[in-house]
Image 1: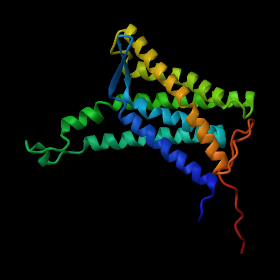
Image 2 (image 1 turned 60 degrees about the vertical axis):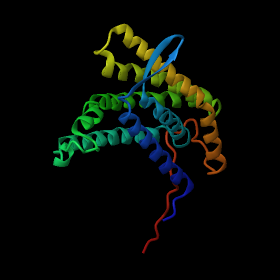
Image 3 (image 1 turned 90 degrees about the horizontal axis):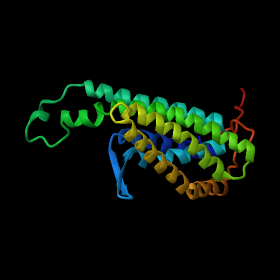
Image 4 (image 1 turned 30 degrees about the horizontal axis):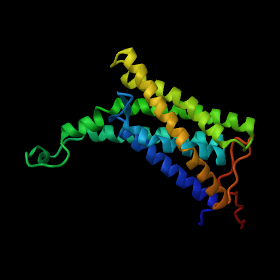
Length: 242
């Protein structure tokens, strides 16, 4: 069976989306920082991957409609859950005796626990923050699209990200760090993370426009109508009867 352009693009977008989401969750436990204005600003390394999911959510919403974007979001949510379940099972498995050898240079139980087991709460928190944030993103994007038609792509893309990522940042920051730091530090963490996400969202707008043009010109796929909640991924085919 030969996949048509619309279905091929859909599969590709979903695959990239899932990869970035899972990787972002796995590396989210690493806290990095930048120094600006003589101050160190902290943020999660997971924010390297998540901007790609912002773009792809908007592309899915734009060309396939909000119902399809919601299905992909729910699928991604459960795939992250599946990933965490596999990690949890792996953590319960016994270790080979060779890992206790002082000459062993591979992963040790302590390293595995630090990277995966101890970061489980961060990944679970991120999982639920993603679900809430993405559902808000999809709803706000669709609202702007109904108001502006297929014009002003930058407005619905940036506007939906601005609203959804504020909620996402507040939720994830509180669930992971809120009980571990003073309220003032928590506020600074939220502001820093949100500003970074917002700057990235604005910065990737040209990428969004570029992808939008490529999809229309190269794949010949038109955006879903402003009042259309879902678009067919592939044309229906009538099977021959006996």
